[in-house]
Length: 388
Image (cartoon, rainbow, N blue to C red; front, side, top):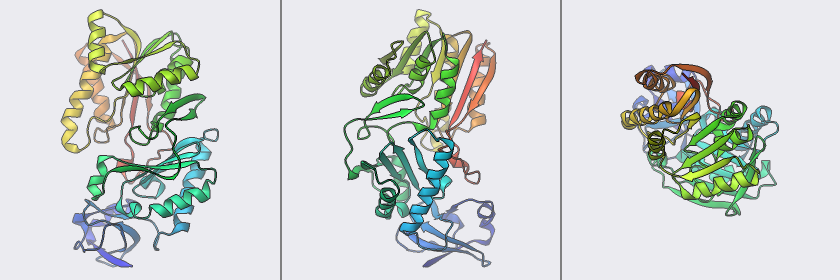
């Protein structure tokens, strides 16, 4: 196994449990191919085991917490451990994030399980070149698998020097699949969807909204496949409207309302900001407004723009809420930290002379566990306020 030496003064994070070694922490950057398994040693002789090396990435090494080259048994055991965790926290569910990268000690790998279908994403060159082992491990652990698709069209792969693509690597992926979450059925396309298909990270937050939506007039912005809207409708909301800018997504959301026999929900194709501005002009107010937009920042340079975006939509939503109404505001933007996001919402309420009562503070679902030594694994913020 090739060796890499790290600087003596760069060990503090590793001793605290981090799995990442940055390029500026290496004594030198060798010319090993991307994805090479290397043994990591410090200048003063400490051994940190094996890791995936990439000379083209800011994260030069991703530690594997093993001393050996990862083989079929390694992947089978790690994926089985991840599966055991999900079955413990979601004993009744059969669709969930099966592997969440570093948090499951499989750095650079994401696997979503949709009943008997799997969607894979490779964020590191080390995982990319071992994808056949990963697929074989899945098939051994889940012999009823119907299809496996690689959803590798996301821009973060460029940071690892990887191409963007999507392809089916086992079995077949139909044009449409249907899953169930918390008793609600969702139909969608794995082939055409963004990311891995469905936003599993809001699983428990959707349940919370179901509990509090009875008799309310609910507006679900950026509704996607209808997750929050359908939970609101099932929870007994008086009226529910879901808004999304994608016609394809709206068609699936309408279909999902139909297959769940929910007649108190409507889906409209529209730009969210335009719709909110229109509601203001009509003086049409709501009991609950849900804001769950896609990420507003893909890098740190986008943070200022993201803050402005969150300020604008939360300001509009607060203006549209009746006294005692519910503001549900979420952010999946990794570079907007929870305290910052909370402050943005508070500032907009203050500008409008409205008072906020924080009722619930949520986060990503437990099938997206947070590895405390890698803050980047904590990304989803979710607040529920009453507005007065």
